[in-house]
Image 1 (cartoon, one colour):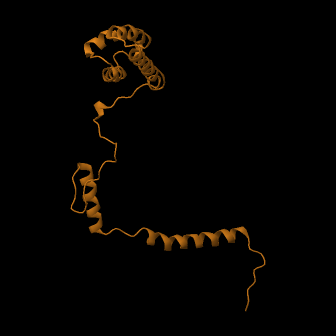
Image 2 (image 1 turned 90 degrees about the vertical axis):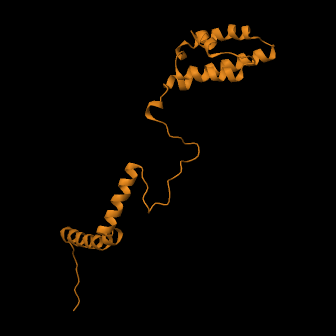
Image 3 (image 1 turned 120 degrees about the vertical axis):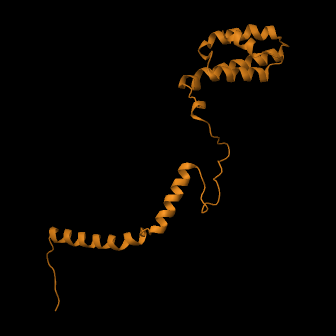
Length: 159
């Protein structure tokens, strides 16, 4: 006895597709997601609590190392710089300082020459005064100056 279907309608097709889909997922899902036993749930909870409190469990091999170049800082130590400072003022001020140091080096400039040239830079970049960027620029000045210059002198020059 051979059954031939000459015409299969959309409702019959959709019912067959639905039954086959449900059957497929009924077989696949249990294999991909095994049920957790009571013992494995207790272990998972203990691991989660240890991670939250910063403790290690016996099951863990050791504390994960931080990637190279990454450091942890406290929230109060974190500061953001405005886009204007990142993209304009600080790099421009740094370039002008490099030019000043180059001139002082080639012309055997003195501390008085530096002070005269730096007053122009400080006036031009007044927005940087009192910011973390100013402290970074001061450090750059102290590292590259051919003469000793104190924090007090630099503060006076910025104001």
